[in-house]
Amino acid sequence: MSYVDEVYDLVVAKNPAQPEFHQAVKEVLESLRVVIEANEDAYRKDALLERLVTPERQILFRVPWVDDKGQVQVNNGFRVQFNSAIGPYKGGLRLHPSVNLGIIKFLGFEQIFKNSLTGLPIGGGKGGSDFDPKGKSDREVMAFCQSFITELYKYIGADTDVPAGDIGTGAREIGYMYGQYKRLTGLYEGVLTGKGLSYGGSLARTEATGYGLLYLTEEMLKCNGKDIAGKTVVVSGSGNVAIYAVQKAQQLGAKVVTVSDSTGWIYDPEGIDVALLKEVKEVKRARLTAYAAARPSAVYHEKKNGEHGVWNIKCDVALPCATQNELNLDDAKALVANGVIAVAEGANMPTTMDATKYLQENGVLFCPGKAANAGGVATSALEMSQNSERLSWTFEEVDSKLKNIMVNIFHNLDAAAKKYGLDGDYVAGANIAGFLKVAEAMTAQGIV
Ligand code: NDP
Image 1 (cartoon, rainbow, N blue to C red):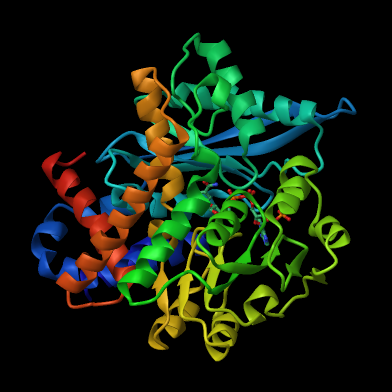
Image 2: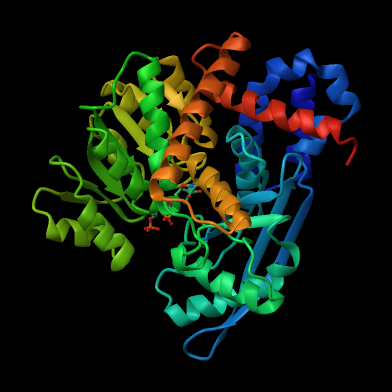
């Protein structure tokens, strides 16, 4: 049996009931096959793949907090410190009822390669909790965040592990967590990113993932003789990534006609009104029905099981920006039938493996999340640099560094794909480029 297959079987056997983690490992290992086979003896001897798929450390903890009725609630807390070969662990904290160890491990594993691709010195980690901030009062969210950090603070630090936001963790949650970390340790350090501007945050961090997604998509189209301007774009999600993806796409001359949330989706043929979307989602924290109520051109659809939702709308470019496995084979078929030319993942692993394969086989330019959404973590690393320097850069400075990073990521993965005879396979290119740097650092650092 090949080394890749052996290690994949080992992952499934040792990590039962973690399908998302298995899926992420399979997708990465499959596309690394050509590189692994070329170095098989050395990698096997050092158990490089076994070490790569095993987190350096997994921290599981209880998070008790008191709700507004005086009732004690208990959530599960997670931090998976996956790989620190090229820098301190870096990756977000997801707060969502669906969070479990397998989800955090899939995200942490992906983060290793994503962080490597940015070219910045950051290792891979991820964390979170099955706490749902939706419908909670500010005091309840604060109580949860303080309890969460009261345990997690022992394991994080500006030079060891620097968490950030993700689904459900925005500026409010990061603020409460940062305050509690400072209170417990007495340290005013860059231990979390995504901080508010008044206490060490970076300009352009809020916009970074969505903007970065568009910078990369623009470059990918350009290198394939196409232009983002004038294109029709469908976006899923209506959170941090989606909102700023819509904004940048419009700035680049595209027309975005959809957004979605977990209960429904909007088709707005005149183009999404970003100011209204921000008001509904960032200020009022309301459902998309509120967007439709305020915008005559918009049609709201309740989400029904088995329907294509936004992927059924005719478009040139599709940007999944909500969550994992939200674009399946049927969705891919609908997109191809409607003439899509490019799909770039704003979310982490939003496209199922069979859907990815179908899109690639049908000539669609496909960029995986670990490259396309790396602008968020890259700008988090820029926030770390500013914190270390005790300086703040201007919006334009950060934005132009972000753009450079995204353009470089695309060229690196394109070159890696070409080098291994996989021209145009950006999934393989991203995995290979991300992997090679980490593998080299792990080998140089010996058996640890
Ligand atoms: P937000 O919480 O701001 O927004 C998430 C959006 O996705 C919301 O519209 C939400 O709808 C929707 N959503 C969440 N879960 C589901 C679900 N199970 N089914 C359908 N819709 C869902 O998160 P972000 O925008 O920050 O993150 C979106 C994706 O991007 C995630 O995969 C995240 O890991 C990834 N990402 C985020 C980065 C960042 O900088 N924020 C960086 C890199 C990747 P509702 O409001 O109804 O829950």
